[in-house]
Structures are given as structure tokens and as C-alpha cells.
Picture 1 (cartoon, rainbow, N blue to C red):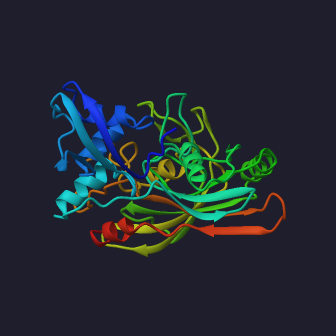
Picture 2 (spheres, rainbow, N blue to C red; picture 1 turned 90 degrees about the vertical axis):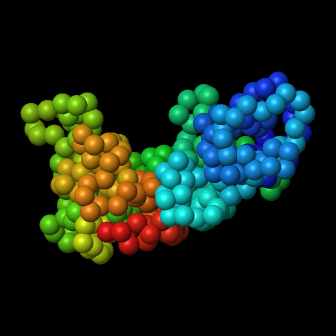
Length: 322
């Protein structure tokens, strides 16, 4: 499979296709929506000229195509925020950065917008695929890539992947029993009443079909979330969170349940105003949730491993607006 996240210089032949189709077809494994994002971010040149319109039809014939994905592809929110700030070049995140690696495990800092694991057989650009390309480029073994746990696609931060079946089994047991520790950082709207607290509301489906904190009369699963407020702002707060259970969207649902939704959350942030910020609260270019720290026992040595993924710079930028 073609290594996606690098600089590509290609000569291609087209019969009048839209540019995003041409780019996606030229790079097997690059989805068409990702090709659109790359073009709108200014990462594509056709015959030496910068292209910016994904829908523009490229004249029939042979063309020199340069697609520079070495620094990753910024998501649409990041591109909008960048244009609003008047920047001259897109601010991009690499798909992942390696935080820890040996022959048993690898811990990566996953960028927002990247899948932790394939969603279906047609998925591309997920961490296992990117790791195969990474190890292939290093001429290193990559026969087994074992998913241990997941974080939401819009969430960035620490992700642990096993390199052997035995390591995967041991690590999955640790994560399932919560002997592995995970801490998150998030920016929320408003501010919790307490500087430290535990949220134990049951998570189920609300009347609108979305996950929410539900009462005892409705079906749901028990969920326990601990948090501490690191810093308060005029219209928001920087909150550190750790989980005692691992329900889907648990942090996002619980924080929204106390009236402090995670900024940039299109599902639970602004009910009835999806994506529209409240008065005095800045629009976030992404979900402001980051898997900050992870700790586990090494599957071979038993040594406690603690890894931290630096909080992305966008958090400080958004915090200034709070």
C-alpha cells in the first residue's frame, strides 16, 4: 500500500475529472473526503501551480501532481479557524507522533480526526494502517498490530497498540479491569460548581436518541467520572478527568450533563444549536478533549510505564478566548 503521509510527486493522466477525484485516484488509500481537505488546505499543486478548489475540473491530458501530506491533513474546523485568524499557511497536525516504542508495544499521540481503528473494511487512514506504513518505511517488522483500546476520532492523545498477541491480551485485561490508568484534559463551557467532584450518572439514550445522563426509570449503564478543575476562566474551565468506567462518550456526556459541555462538541455541546457557540464562548476548531496521560504495566517486564502526550497548542489558543 502506498505510504500516504509523505510528499508525493506524480505524473498522472486525466480525462477531465474534478481535482479531488484525480488526487484520490492517484493515491490508493486516500479517501476522497481527505483529498478535498488536502486541496482546500493548500497541499496540492498541479503543473507547478497551487490548487485550492477541490471541485475544479482538470483539463484532459498529462499533468504533474504534487501532494504534500508529510505534515498530515488539517481537518475542516482547523482550516476555518486558521482562515479566521488570517494565517498564511494551514496549521496541520501529524496523524500521530511516537511517544514510546519497543518490540512489545507502541504508544502514539493520535491527532484529532484520525480513527483509532478501522470502522469497517473500507476504512483508510486509521492508526493500524498508518503504523504499518511507519514500520515499513523503517524496514521494521510489523506483522501484528493489536488494538488495545480506542479513543474517539475527534479526541487526540495517548493510544496504546500491541505488537504481539500476548501483549494485546495482557494489556486488554489491564484496560478492562481499569488497572491501566488514563487521564484526560478538556476545555469546557461554563465551570463546574466544585473544584473536585465525582459524576456517577447512568448513561443511556435520551428522548432525542442521543446518549445522555438518564434517571433510574430508563435503561442505561452505570458510569463513574472523576474530575478536578485545573484553571477557571471567565466563560469556561480547563478540567482534568479520569474514568472509573469506560462508556462510549462518557466524558462528553457527563460534562454536558452538569451544564459544562466540552468545547467543540457537535453532539452534546449546544442542544438545538449544533455547532453554534453560546454568547461569550469562542467557537473551537475541534473537540477540546485530549487523552493526556496513560499508565500500564509492561506486558513482558511488569514495569509500570507512564506516558504523557503534550496538550496541543490549540488548547492554549482557545483558552485565551475564554
